[in-house]
Structure formats: C-alpha cells, structure tokens
Image (tube, rainbow, N blue to C red; front, side, top):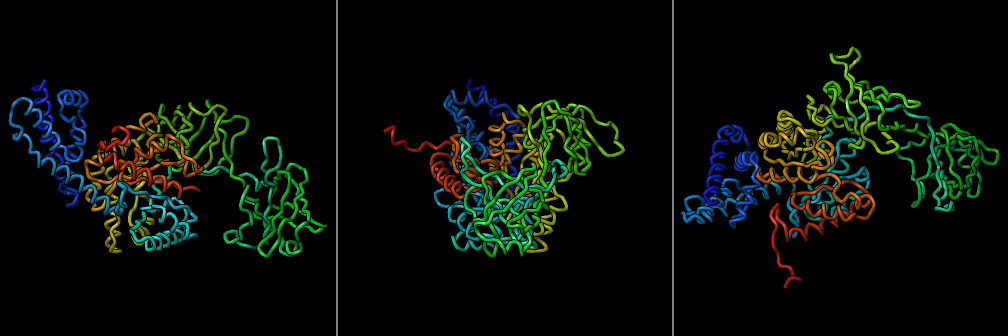
Length: 614
C-alpha cells in the first residue's frame, strides 16, 4: 500500500509542475503581494481536478494527514505527505520535505491571507477571528445615533447597496459611519455594492389610488388596535411631512386635506369617511396639533384618493393616496410570455396568459426550449416551451410554462429577480450606472463590490475602472467579486487570477443567488469550495445572504441559523442584512465568532481542552 501511496503522491506533484508553466504569464501579471497566492491558486486548481477521496482514506489508514489544510501551501502539503510515506517505507523523508520549511510555508500562507484581509476589510477585533459587515438601511442617512449604535455593538464594516437610495443619502450614511468610527476608535471601512445589470421582471400597471386603514383584532374579533388615519395639510411635501404620533400597531393611512378644514377640527370630532365598498365609516379625532390630526375608527376602511369626507357639515377632499402596486397571481401550469417590452402590463383576467417584461433583452434572446427560468428567488420555476427562432420583428420573446409553484399559487410583482441557470448571457457586469456609482465610491468609500460577475472580461473591466478612478482621486478602492452565478462559480480560478492584478481584492459569496442558480441541495458544498479556493489564493472571503436572518427580522433566531452562523466563522467576514433587530444580530454573531474562534481555524478543527471530559 505504501508504494501505491508514494506513486500517487509523486504523480500529483508532477501534475503541479506540469500545470504551472501554462499560467506563468497570469501569475506574473498579478500584483506583487498576490504572486505567491496566485501560484498556490494554480496548484490548488490543478489538485482539485483530481478525485482525492480514496487517496485521503488510504493516507488516513497509515496515520498520515489526509491533506487537510493543504490550501495554505499545496506543494508543501503534498511534499509533507510524501515525506511521511517515505519514512514509513524506511526511506529518508528529508529527500521530499523539510519539516521546518513545511511549517514556515503554512504560516506564510496564513499570514498573507490575514494581511490581505486586514488591508481590505480592516482588522478583526481582539478575540474574534472574523469581521461583521452590516447592510445600512435608508434610515442610516437620517439617524447618526443608529449608526453609532451599530458600531458600538460590533459592526466592523458598513455596506451600502447602490440599488437603493441615491448619492445624497449615500454621502450622509458615509458621514455618519466616519463619525461613528471616530467615536469608537477603530477603522470601519465602507463597502458599496454596485447594482449590476438588473435581471428583473418588468413593470405591472398600477391599480386605483386606494389606501386602507386597518384594525387589528384578536381571534375572537375583539379590536386590539383601531384603524387610524393621519391627516396633514394639503401642499405639505410628503418627503418632509411630519410623522404621526403612533408608536405601536399598524401604521396609519396618511392623507392630505384642506388646511382651513383641518384647522377647524379638534379632539372628539367625528369624521364621516366613505368606503370604496359603498359603506360609511366613522373616525373620531384623538389628537390635533400644528403638524396634523390623528383619527381612529373601529372598522376597516378603504379610501380612494379624491374622496370627500365631512365633519359637522364641513367637507374636504382627501389627497395624496398613491396608486396601489399590483401583482399577478401565478399558478402551476400557467403560461407566461416573457418579452423585452418594458411597458407596464395588465394582470390577466380569468386565467389568461401572463405577459411579463424582462429588464435585459439579452436574457430573453439567449433562451432556448427546455431552459429553466426562475422568478423571485426561485419560488416560481418555469420552463421554456417556445421561442421565435430567428429574431422576432417586435423583439425577443419566450413562452414559458410554470412547472413549480406553491399550492394555490403565488403572487409575482414587478422588480422581482429572474434567474436563468445554465444560460450564458453576454451582458457586461459593469453598467453605465455602475460606473457612475464607482466614481462616487472612489471619492467617499473604501471598497466596491462587483455584482453579477460572470466572465474574466467583467473582472478586467472593473480593475481598469478602479485604476482610472484611482488616477483621478488618488484613492485606491478595494474590490470584492460577488460570486452569485453558475458561470462565476465555474470560472472562479480565472476570475481570481484576473482580480489579483489589483492590490486589494476579496470575494463575496452570495449564497442566496447561488442556491437559486445551482440548486438548494448544493448550498452546503459550494460556499465551502469557494472558501477553500480563496484560502489557497490567500484572498479574503465575505459570506453573505441570510446569516441570522430570522433574528435580524423578528428578534428570535432559529436553531439552524445559529449553527449556520457558527460555520460562517470560516470566512474572514460575515454580512448581516438590514432588519429591525440587526443590532441584536451583531451582538449574537460577535459572541458566536468569539467562541468558535477558540475551536476552529478556517477548515481545520482545533482540539481545545474540554472541561467536561476531565
């Protein structure tokens, strides 16, 4: 057996030697700080082309390390295993590996990764192996105290999603992060996610401008919280309109009315409000002041914009109720016509064919019969049944049949994500809008994240754009590659080699999108493979999507997500999404990582002392 092991290990070492020359130019093109990692990445990619499971079992049978932790230095790890086998055969192990050199190589790989992580993501705080990135909600632009609280609880990086808000609000958020950074006395880098090409459903025609004031009831029908209407003066800008004095229950329906009519009202007045269902509703004024008036009722009310309400024979029309966004009910077996037409569509009546626009015509054009199309994070799955063949005169289209959907159907709205697993789309990751956002980030932020990266050219374009921005501003941004597509996962070694031409680079693993693209059954394997590949490249990883999601949104974590958060410690950084309980999620993640850091380092379990086994 030992001779077979020696032969197999020699074959792997020879394969590494053969694989290196073909990538020499790519390694030389990398930034100096990344060349060692690039060479190790080439070795690791060569190694992972082999199925090593049988070899690992046989190494373990004779008491030799089964290549666990080889990512730090692949050649040295194989050499160490070969030296151990040589010793078992009575040969001189020094001919294959030097123990001190092997340990030094492993330490150098770990140190390089740690340095790159510190440079890109900031230093991990004492007692923690990783960092916490927090997605800032819109309120972070208006509330510096909120941002300071996140920093005090343990936020290490702040993330801004460029798909939301605008440069003015981004600038305010960043100013609040910088102030919080000064207050807590440590660096808090700002990362900005570029929106990328928007592969989303097109608009659906709006409904009537109708708002709803709703009561909250117990199971027996008892009203717990009344329906509320907040009335302010006509002409007040909705963006600066005063907030209603309500701290619990449902948000009030907000309307604007004639200022003179409003000024004549006082607490105790009864307002008669016509409901769109041709019934009357009564609301009693409970508070009135300079900012507005709050009225409460014991019944639900649907109120149309322009409706006349009255109180003591004084009448006014309500204004400011927006048109209702509409959705389309999708059921299994439904037919969907997916087109490049982005005009708002009407929801079908009586089960007719559903028509949907797609924001990227290239995607529709690339579809073929049999391709899968997933909507809204994969909750609706369809299959292409027909295409026009040659280019259609009125633009590309594809007819789909819904093959998977929740029993009873599912609502699908506009601006919902579309995934086309296995379909290669020739659309650049860096859009014109992204280039404008990148120029903003070059002046204000520390890192940009490239969304929907698919090809090596996508990465090359981003690196060039970063170099141009650095020449203009004198500031060099870090780069995160967001791996969220099947194409990106399969091309990861090439994408990393291209990105490593840049000094400060990392990878964000978008688990949610990857699960939709690759299948949920692969969700445990693929992020692990990406993390190990990046470890070999000595490039830091940010693990994203749905970490402590229940805790962030509801204040109560599930048992499964606590375990998931512990596994996430293998990454250099973990991203939390926005939610009302994000501050509590930061503290929980901090505690988990502080504990896990004592028993786990990357993929290597550390056997600390267990008190209960004494």
